[in-house]
Length: 357
Ligand SMILES: Cc1cc2nc3c(=O)[nH]c(=O)nc-3n(C[C@H](O)[C@H](O)[C@H](O)COP(=O)(O)O)c2cc1C
Image (cartoon, rainbow, N blue to C red):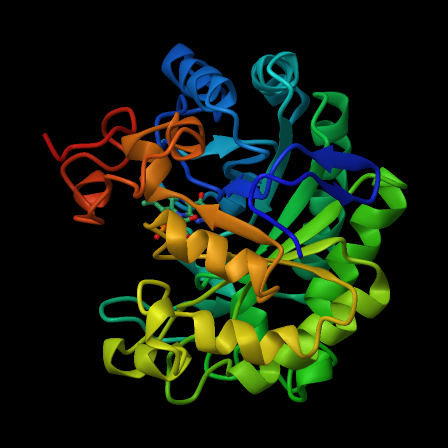
Protein backbone atom coordinates (compact mmCIF):
# COMPACT_ATOMS: atom_id res chain seq x y z
CA UNK A 1 0.00 0.00 0.00
CA UNK A 2 1.36 3.41 -0.99
CA UNK A 3 1.70 6.11 1.62
CA UNK A 4 1.88 9.92 1.50
CA UNK A 5 5.53 10.16 2.37
CA UNK A 6 6.69 7.44 -0.04
CA UNK A 7 8.83 8.29 -3.04
CA UNK A 8 7.40 8.12 -6.52
CA UNK A 9 9.14 7.68 -9.86
CA UNK A 10 7.86 9.62 -12.83
CA UNK A 11 9.76 8.44 -15.91
CA UNK A 12 13.27 9.90 -15.40
CA UNK A 13 12.71 11.65 -12.04
CA UNK A 14 11.91 10.69 -8.46
CA UNK A 15 9.61 12.68 -6.19
CA UNK A 16 10.60 12.44 -2.54
CA UNK A 17 6.94 12.28 -1.41
CA UNK A 18 3.43 12.33 -2.87
CA UNK A 19 2.82 16.08 -2.49
CA UNK A 20 2.60 18.38 -5.45
CA UNK A 21 2.21 22.13 -5.51
CA UNK A 22 -0.33 22.71 -8.25
CA UNK A 23 0.49 25.45 -10.75
CA UNK A 24 -0.17 28.80 -9.11
CA UNK A 25 0.63 32.06 -10.81
CA UNK A 26 2.09 34.72 -8.60
CA UNK A 27 0.72 37.25 -11.14
CA UNK A 28 3.67 39.49 -10.42
CA UNK A 29 6.04 39.13 -13.36
CA UNK A 30 7.27 42.22 -15.19
CA UNK A 31 5.36 43.44 -18.23
CA UNK A 32 7.88 41.58 -20.44
CA UNK A 33 7.17 38.28 -18.63
CA UNK A 34 10.46 38.07 -16.70
CA UNK A 35 10.42 37.17 -13.00
CA UNK A 36 10.78 39.69 -10.18
CA UNK A 37 12.79 38.87 -7.05
CA UNK A 38 9.74 38.17 -4.78
CA UNK A 39 8.74 35.34 -7.15
CA UNK A 40 12.19 33.76 -6.83
CA UNK A 41 11.90 34.11 -3.03
CA UNK A 42 8.53 32.35 -3.09
CA UNK A 43 10.04 29.32 -4.86
CA UNK A 44 12.82 29.26 -2.28
CA UNK A 45 10.20 29.06 0.50
CA UNK A 46 8.29 26.33 -1.32
CA UNK A 47 11.46 24.36 -2.02
CA UNK A 48 12.58 24.55 1.61
CA UNK A 49 9.14 23.26 2.63
CA UNK A 50 9.85 19.77 1.33
CA UNK A 51 7.21 19.49 -1.44
CA UNK A 52 7.96 16.53 -3.74
CA UNK A 53 7.02 18.25 -7.00
CA UNK A 54 6.55 21.97 -7.60
CA UNK A 55 4.71 23.27 -10.64
CA UNK A 56 5.39 26.82 -11.74
CA UNK A 57 2.51 29.20 -12.33
CA UNK A 58 1.28 29.06 -15.90
CA UNK A 59 3.79 30.48 -18.39
CA UNK A 60 2.68 31.91 -21.73
CA UNK A 61 4.24 30.23 -24.75
CA UNK A 62 3.43 33.15 -27.08
CA UNK A 63 2.65 36.79 -26.38
CA UNK A 64 -0.78 36.20 -27.92
CA UNK A 65 -1.39 33.59 -25.21
CA UNK A 66 -0.91 35.82 -22.18
CA UNK A 67 -3.89 35.46 -19.86
CA UNK A 68 -3.55 38.36 -17.44
CA UNK A 69 -1.35 41.12 -16.11
CA UNK A 70 1.68 39.79 -14.22
CA UNK A 71 1.70 36.40 -15.98
CA UNK A 72 5.23 35.12 -16.50
CA UNK A 73 6.49 34.04 -19.90
CA UNK A 74 8.52 31.28 -21.52
CA UNK A 75 7.98 32.59 -25.05
CA UNK A 76 11.47 33.96 -25.63
CA UNK A 77 15.03 33.20 -24.59
CA UNK A 78 15.18 36.30 -22.37
CA UNK A 79 12.80 34.47 -19.99
CA UNK A 80 15.28 31.66 -19.35
CA UNK A 81 17.62 33.42 -16.89
CA UNK A 82 14.95 34.01 -14.23
CA UNK A 83 13.46 30.54 -14.67
CA UNK A 84 16.93 29.05 -14.26
CA UNK A 85 17.19 30.66 -10.83
CA UNK A 86 14.04 28.97 -9.54
CA UNK A 87 15.00 25.59 -10.99
CA UNK A 88 18.37 25.83 -9.24
CA UNK A 89 16.83 26.75 -5.88
CA UNK A 90 14.37 23.85 -6.00
CA UNK A 91 17.05 21.33 -6.96
CA UNK A 92 19.38 22.57 -4.25
CA UNK A 93 16.65 21.65 -1.77
CA UNK A 94 16.10 18.16 -3.20
CA UNK A 95 12.81 19.01 -4.92
CA UNK A 96 11.59 18.61 -8.46
CA UNK A 97 10.22 21.40 -10.61
CA UNK A 98 8.09 21.34 -13.74
CA UNK A 99 7.07 24.29 -15.95
CA UNK A 100 3.38 24.70 -16.71
CA UNK A 101 2.97 25.80 -20.35
CA UNK A 102 -0.13 27.68 -21.37
CA UNK A 103 -1.90 29.65 -24.07
CA UNK A 104 -4.94 31.66 -23.02
CA UNK A 105 -6.79 31.54 -26.35
CA UNK A 106 -10.01 33.51 -25.97
CA UNK A 107 -8.98 34.57 -22.48
CA UNK A 108 -6.27 36.79 -24.05
CA UNK A 109 -7.27 40.44 -24.47
CA UNK A 110 -7.90 42.37 -26.60
CA UNK A 111 -7.54 39.91 -29.53
CA UNK A 112 -9.60 37.01 -28.25
CA UNK A 113 -8.87 34.13 -30.61
CA UNK A 114 -9.88 30.53 -29.97
CA UNK A 115 -11.33 27.52 -31.74
CA UNK A 116 -14.49 29.34 -32.86
CA UNK A 117 -16.47 32.49 -32.48
CA UNK A 118 -17.75 32.46 -28.94
CA UNK A 119 -19.75 35.07 -27.05
CA UNK A 120 -18.81 35.99 -23.51
CA UNK A 121 -20.78 38.39 -21.32
CA UNK A 122 -19.52 41.51 -23.10
CA UNK A 123 -17.11 40.22 -25.71
CA UNK A 124 -16.87 37.95 -28.72
CA UNK A 125 -13.93 35.79 -29.80
CA UNK A 126 -12.80 35.01 -33.33
CA UNK A 127 -11.82 31.63 -34.78
CA UNK A 128 -8.10 30.94 -35.20
CA UNK A 129 -6.72 30.15 -38.64
CA UNK A 130 -4.96 26.86 -39.38
CA UNK A 131 -1.63 28.76 -39.53
CA UNK A 132 -2.21 30.26 -36.08
CA UNK A 133 -2.90 26.80 -34.67
CA UNK A 134 0.28 25.40 -36.20
CA UNK A 135 2.29 28.33 -34.78
CA UNK A 136 0.92 27.62 -31.33
CA UNK A 137 1.84 23.93 -31.55
CA UNK A 138 5.39 24.93 -32.50
CA UNK A 139 5.49 27.49 -29.68
CA UNK A 140 4.69 24.82 -27.08
CA UNK A 141 7.65 22.80 -28.40
CA UNK A 142 9.97 25.83 -28.27
CA UNK A 143 8.78 26.63 -24.76
CA UNK A 144 9.47 23.06 -23.63
CA UNK A 145 12.97 23.36 -25.01
CA UNK A 146 13.48 26.59 -23.01
CA UNK A 147 12.15 24.86 -19.89
CA UNK A 148 14.77 22.13 -20.14
CA UNK A 149 17.46 24.71 -20.95
CA UNK A 150 16.47 26.49 -17.74
CA UNK A 151 17.00 23.22 -15.85
CA UNK A 152 13.40 22.17 -15.24
CA UNK A 153 12.69 18.46 -14.77
CA UNK A 154 9.81 18.46 -17.24
CA UNK A 155 6.75 20.32 -18.45
CA UNK A 156 3.03 20.26 -17.89
CA UNK A 157 0.54 21.16 -20.64
CA UNK A 158 -2.27 23.29 -19.18
CA UNK A 159 -5.32 21.53 -20.55
CA UNK A 160 -7.83 22.76 -17.96
CA UNK A 161 -9.71 25.83 -16.67
CA UNK A 162 -11.02 27.22 -19.96
CA UNK A 163 -7.66 28.09 -21.55
CA UNK A 164 -6.86 27.26 -25.17
CA UNK A 165 -6.35 23.49 -24.94
CA UNK A 166 -9.53 23.05 -22.92
CA UNK A 167 -11.38 25.44 -25.26
CA UNK A 168 -10.58 23.06 -28.11
CA UNK A 169 -11.65 20.05 -26.03
CA UNK A 170 -15.03 21.57 -25.18
CA UNK A 171 -17.85 21.16 -27.64
CA UNK A 172 -19.45 24.28 -26.14
CA UNK A 173 -16.55 26.47 -27.31
CA UNK A 174 -15.20 24.44 -30.23
CA UNK A 175 -17.72 24.60 -33.08
CA UNK A 176 -15.21 24.07 -35.88
CA UNK A 177 -16.07 21.75 -38.72
CA UNK A 178 -12.51 21.10 -39.88
CA UNK A 179 -10.06 18.47 -38.51
CA UNK A 180 -9.67 20.53 -35.28
CA UNK A 181 -13.35 20.32 -34.31
CA UNK A 182 -16.41 18.07 -34.36
CA UNK A 183 -15.75 14.64 -32.85
CA UNK A 184 -13.88 14.35 -29.55
CA UNK A 185 -11.02 12.77 -31.48
CA UNK A 186 -10.83 15.98 -33.56
CA UNK A 187 -11.27 18.29 -30.57
CA UNK A 188 -8.31 16.47 -29.01
CA UNK A 189 -6.13 17.11 -32.04
CA UNK A 190 -4.61 20.31 -30.63
CA UNK A 191 -3.68 18.55 -27.39
CA UNK A 192 -2.15 15.56 -29.15
CA UNK A 193 -0.27 17.77 -31.64
CA UNK A 194 1.15 19.80 -28.74
CA UNK A 195 2.04 16.63 -26.83
CA UNK A 196 3.87 15.09 -29.83
CA UNK A 197 5.71 18.36 -30.52
CA UNK A 198 6.86 18.56 -26.91
CA UNK A 199 7.80 14.89 -26.70
CA UNK A 200 9.95 15.17 -29.81
CA UNK A 201 11.71 18.12 -28.14
CA UNK A 202 12.25 16.83 -24.60
CA UNK A 203 13.03 13.15 -25.22
CA UNK A 204 12.82 11.20 -21.98
CA UNK A 205 11.88 14.11 -19.68
CA UNK A 206 8.44 13.88 -18.05
CA UNK A 207 5.55 15.47 -19.94
CA UNK A 208 2.45 16.01 -17.82
CA UNK A 209 -1.07 17.24 -18.41
CA UNK A 210 -3.53 19.19 -16.27
CA UNK A 211 -7.00 18.18 -17.39
CA UNK A 212 -10.56 18.94 -16.37
CA UNK A 213 -12.66 16.03 -15.18
CA UNK A 214 -15.65 18.15 -16.20
CA UNK A 215 -16.22 21.75 -17.33
CA UNK A 216 -19.43 21.82 -15.29
CA UNK A 217 -21.21 23.30 -18.25
CA UNK A 218 -24.43 21.69 -19.52
CA UNK A 219 -23.01 21.52 -23.08
CA UNK A 220 -19.27 21.28 -22.54
CA UNK A 221 -16.59 18.73 -21.67
CA UNK A 222 -17.92 15.86 -19.55
CA UNK A 223 -16.33 13.20 -17.36
CA UNK A 224 -17.07 10.77 -20.16
CA UNK A 225 -15.00 12.94 -22.56
CA UNK A 226 -12.32 13.28 -19.90
CA UNK A 227 -12.06 9.50 -19.53
CA UNK A 228 -11.48 9.16 -23.26
CA UNK A 229 -8.75 11.82 -23.19
CA UNK A 230 -7.09 10.25 -20.14
CA UNK A 231 -6.95 6.86 -21.83
CA UNK A 232 -5.66 8.19 -25.15
CA UNK A 233 -3.02 10.41 -23.56
CA UNK A 234 -1.63 7.58 -21.45
CA UNK A 235 -1.51 5.41 -24.58
CA UNK A 236 0.58 8.16 -26.22
CA UNK A 237 3.01 8.24 -23.31
CA UNK A 238 2.03 11.18 -21.12
CA UNK A 239 3.65 10.66 -17.71
CA UNK A 240 1.19 12.16 -15.24
CA UNK A 241 -2.31 13.59 -15.48
CA UNK A 242 -3.43 16.07 -12.84
CA UNK A 243 -7.22 16.15 -12.56
CA UNK A 244 -8.91 19.48 -12.00
CA UNK A 245 -12.25 20.93 -13.09
CA UNK A 246 -14.17 23.95 -14.33
CA UNK A 247 -14.06 25.93 -17.53
CA UNK A 248 -16.01 28.29 -19.73
CA UNK A 249 -19.76 27.97 -19.24
CA UNK A 250 -19.27 26.60 -15.72
CA UNK A 251 -22.38 26.40 -13.54
CA UNK A 252 -21.82 26.10 -9.81
CA UNK A 253 -24.87 23.89 -9.34
CA UNK A 254 -23.33 21.19 -11.58
CA UNK A 255 -20.18 20.71 -9.48
CA UNK A 256 -21.92 18.22 -7.20
CA UNK A 257 -21.92 15.68 -10.02
CA UNK A 258 -18.18 15.26 -9.42
CA UNK A 259 -18.61 14.40 -5.71
CA UNK A 260 -17.88 10.95 -4.26
CA UNK A 261 -20.58 8.90 -2.51
CA UNK A 262 -18.19 8.28 0.38
CA UNK A 263 -18.73 11.20 2.77
CA UNK A 264 -15.20 10.81 4.18
CA UNK A 265 -14.07 12.41 0.88
CA UNK A 266 -16.42 15.41 1.06
CA UNK A 267 -13.63 17.99 1.27
CA UNK A 268 -12.41 17.09 -2.24
CA UNK A 269 -15.22 17.96 -4.65
CA UNK A 270 -13.84 16.05 -7.66
CA UNK A 271 -13.22 12.74 -5.84
CA UNK A 272 -16.16 10.95 -7.50
CA UNK A 273 -15.01 11.90 -10.98
CA UNK A 274 -11.43 10.99 -10.02
CA UNK A 275 -12.65 7.49 -9.17
CA UNK A 276 -14.40 7.27 -12.56
CA UNK A 277 -11.23 8.40 -14.35
CA UNK A 278 -9.04 6.06 -12.34
CA UNK A 279 -10.73 3.22 -14.16
CA UNK A 280 -9.24 4.61 -17.40
CA UNK A 281 -5.65 5.26 -16.30
CA UNK A 282 -4.27 1.71 -16.46
CA UNK A 283 -0.81 1.99 -14.93
CA UNK A 284 -0.69 5.75 -15.60
CA UNK A 285 -0.01 8.18 -12.76
CA UNK A 286 -2.77 10.49 -11.60
CA UNK A 287 -2.79 13.52 -9.31
CA UNK A 288 -5.89 15.25 -7.99
CA UNK A 289 -6.26 18.91 -7.06
CA UNK A 290 -8.90 21.01 -5.33
CA UNK A 291 -10.05 21.06 -1.76
CA UNK A 292 -7.45 19.01 0.14
CA UNK A 293 -7.26 20.22 3.70
CA UNK A 294 -6.95 17.42 6.23
CA UNK A 295 -4.10 14.97 6.59
CA UNK A 296 -6.62 12.15 7.11
CA UNK A 297 -8.19 12.75 3.68
CA UNK A 298 -4.78 13.01 2.01
CA UNK A 299 -3.70 9.70 3.58
CA UNK A 300 -7.02 8.07 2.76
CA UNK A 301 -6.92 8.93 -0.93
CA UNK A 302 -3.33 7.74 -1.40
CA UNK A 303 -3.67 4.59 0.70
CA UNK A 304 -6.81 3.44 -1.10
CA UNK A 305 -5.02 4.11 -4.43
CA UNK A 306 -7.64 6.52 -5.73
CA UNK A 307 -4.82 8.77 -6.96
CA UNK A 308 -1.02 8.70 -6.73
CA UNK A 309 -0.36 12.33 -5.79
CA UNK A 310 -2.08 14.97 -3.62
CA UNK A 311 -1.92 18.32 -5.37
CA UNK A 312 -2.64 21.65 -3.68
CA UNK A 313 -2.46 25.33 -4.49
CA UNK A 314 -4.10 27.66 -1.94
CA UNK A 315 -2.89 25.76 1.15
CA UNK A 316 0.70 26.44 0.00
CA UNK A 317 -0.03 30.14 -0.51
CA UNK A 318 -0.93 30.31 3.15
CA UNK A 319 1.87 28.01 4.27
CA UNK A 320 4.73 27.04 1.93
CA UNK A 321 6.06 24.75 4.71
CA UNK A 322 2.81 22.78 4.99
CA UNK A 323 4.37 19.41 4.06
CA UNK A 324 6.89 19.69 6.88
CA UNK A 325 4.13 20.66 9.31
CA UNK A 326 1.97 17.69 8.28
CA UNK A 327 4.95 15.38 8.62
CA UNK A 328 5.40 16.36 12.26
CA UNK A 329 1.77 15.90 13.15
CA UNK A 330 -0.22 18.99 12.13
CA UNK A 331 -3.61 17.59 11.20
CA UNK A 332 -4.82 20.10 8.69
CA UNK A 333 -3.90 22.95 6.35
CA UNK A 334 -4.85 26.35 7.72
CA UNK A 335 -6.06 27.79 4.40
CA UNK A 336 -9.84 28.26 4.51
CA UNK A 337 -10.17 28.94 0.75
CA UNK A 338 -11.55 32.43 1.26
CA UNK A 339 -10.12 33.30 -2.18
CA UNK A 340 -8.90 36.72 -1.06
CA UNK A 341 -5.67 35.87 -2.93
CA UNK A 342 -7.74 36.01 -6.13
CA UNK A 343 -9.62 39.25 -5.39
CA UNK A 344 -9.52 41.74 -8.30
CA UNK A 345 -7.89 44.45 -6.18
CA UNK A 346 -4.82 42.22 -5.49
CA UNK A 347 -4.59 39.60 -8.26
CA UNK A 348 -2.11 40.82 -10.89
CA UNK A 349 -1.52 44.01 -8.91
CA UNK A 350 0.70 42.81 -6.09
CA UNK A 351 2.78 39.78 -5.23
CA UNK A 352 0.80 36.63 -4.42
CA UNK A 353 0.29 36.13 -0.71
CA UNK A 354 -2.31 34.98 1.80
CA UNK A 355 -4.66 37.82 2.77
CA UNK A 356 -6.49 35.98 5.55
CA UNK A 357 -4.82 37.92 8.35
C1 LIG B 1 -3.79 32.58 -6.88
C2 LIG B 1 -4.04 31.38 -7.72
C3 LIG B 1 -3.35 31.23 -8.92
C4 LIG B 1 -3.56 30.09 -9.71
N1 LIG B 1 -2.83 29.94 -10.86
C5 LIG B 1 -2.96 28.81 -11.59
C6 LIG B 1 -2.12 28.57 -12.71
O1 LIG B 1 -1.23 29.36 -13.03
N2 LIG B 1 -2.31 27.41 -13.40
C7 LIG B 1 -3.26 26.49 -13.04
O2 LIG B 1 -3.38 25.45 -13.69
N3 LIG B 1 -4.05 26.69 -11.98
C8 LIG B 1 -3.91 27.81 -11.24
N4 LIG B 1 -4.66 27.97 -10.11
C9 LIG B 1 -5.58 26.87 -9.71
C10 LIG B 1 -4.87 25.91 -8.76
O3 LIG B 1 -3.78 25.25 -9.36
C11 LIG B 1 -5.83 24.82 -8.25
O4 LIG B 1 -6.24 24.03 -9.35
C12 LIG B 1 -7.04 25.38 -7.52
O5 LIG B 1 -6.68 26.48 -6.70
C13 LIG B 1 -7.70 24.31 -6.62
O6 LIG B 1 -6.78 23.76 -5.72
P1 LIG B 1 -6.72 24.17 -4.14
O7 LIG B 1 -8.09 23.90 -3.57
O8 LIG B 1 -5.66 23.31 -3.55
O9 LIG B 1 -6.39 25.64 -4.09
C14 LIG B 1 -4.49 29.10 -9.31
C15 LIG B 1 -5.16 29.26 -8.10
C16 LIG B 1 -4.94 30.36 -7.30
C17 LIG B 1 -5.66 30.47 -5.98
